[in-house]
Image 1 (cartoon, one colour):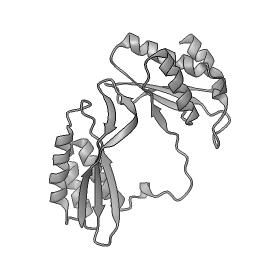
Image 2 (cartoon, rainbow, N blue to C red):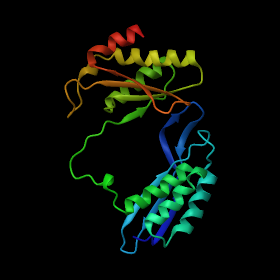
Image 3 (spheres, rainbow, N blue to C red):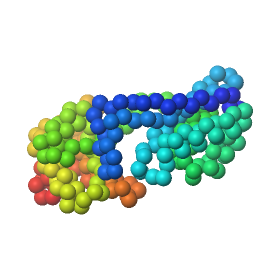
Image 4 (cartoon, rainbow, N blue to C red):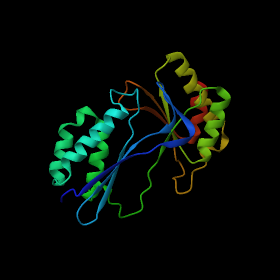
Length: 219
């Protein structure tokens, strides 16, 4: 399969609520959107959002990487195109991922085929840091159906500990936490995850409904 065309776009997506990280607060996202086409009109899509401050990557550098490599691989076989992009991936991993994802979707990668109903649990970032705001956000996130919270830590260990405990206590204070969402097993657990900037994966506590109050009170 040959790449007939690669179209690059940048978009600005205002957020409903600020997205708070340890190094920056976002009020909008500005991802790079990649559209790949072959001669038969098939289309693949990819995207990459470079988060300034989280690594050496910059939005300007990512955009330049996409433009340079898109121009270089148009007309190539998709396998050769992926090999070229992958070989230079260290220069801008997020930008390269956007290009590679679009090409893989164009190739109809098997992992992108969904031939049956699939239910995937989604996590949600947790932004609040003040006790009253924490309680309100816990309530709102649970109303939305989330059962896994991702909590970024890393600024101050004592403040992070107090914040995590406040979230645990707010969760334990809600009596209906044990009510499963539609389609969920009766013992559907609650997962509380926290992640430092240096960690490669989050640390999670998986709690059954009966454990949440005890966990919050003892932590």
